[in-house]
Image 1 (cartoon, helix red, strand yellow):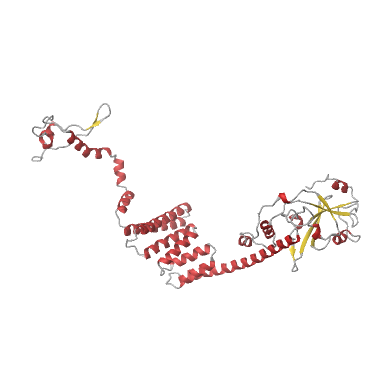
Image 2: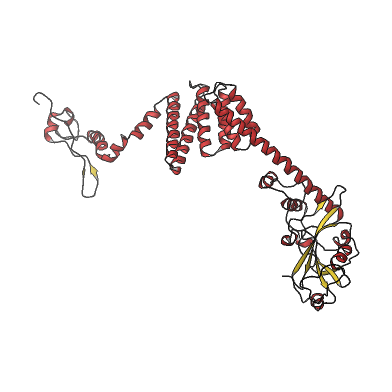
Length: 449
């Protein structure tokens, strides 16, 4: 335009044949019309119309940034997320906490919406995002103690994060956040309500009821929900206490039984003949005397019998005479009627199983306890108080061999024979001296299956 000075624009850099970049000199027309284009009078080594090196470098600094930034990067610099981050960096701590809390609320609602759509993966991701945003807000407040962020806001952040943890199933963290929220703002009924929910999920029912009472003492938007939650916790607490009482009684019996066995010198191993003994278990009466179910195995026919109750102080002779006496019905498979009271002999196998030490013995007795439910097993999962290793000790079992049992000896003496370990219940193998199988058995030709 007429009257305006001539343009002083500098041409873009040019690459020489070697790939080096250098700024081009201004055109003669621009140089002659620009004061910066001419050397000062008397300047040595600079001809009129030439550009100095300093002027060329300054011109290059003005041109290079706009030429080297690609259009994609310039566009990325204007992306809304990046713009929001730049804006966030310039915000005050109060504004940053507010923005993070609002974004957390949005993520929490997004998770609930994804849940209604059945999108479980997206739902969980949204809840995790909410937890992260609330955590950032809490950290920002902690890093700026002088900022004007009241405790009620911090209580809200912990409370909202507690809700996100509840929805994720992180009940321990939910309880911690809800507890902190209640500490920061004792007037907010949502904090104890969420703490009560977490306690119910953690099976801490007494604490849940206490939290419900705390919430009910405050203005609440949902007293009916609180009353329902408290009733549920109370019902579950009663059931939990009943299980605990039953479990304590069962454990007490098992520990007393194990103690009686140790005092009698009986070594017990894991049950090896459960299918033959059925539901019958060893037990101890009020006088402290053991009572045993006894399994009789007939190796000749691979059949068995069960004597349901033999007192620890009784002998097996009376039971044998009753089972094989002249008035007893013959065994179905004993066609030769070789098995009679005067011909049968009983044998036990020593070291058939390794002995169980204290802890493992009590646990084995608990596993076999009659009426033991899954809830009982869970309640007693802590193990027994007895000392000792849990693993069976094969080194303490000795050599395996067949030993003939004296029928007139009390069971107490038979079960404490050297190297004998009771395989859950006493087991005796019965053979007859009148049967050809007797030689097969006593010569060691018969091997237990």
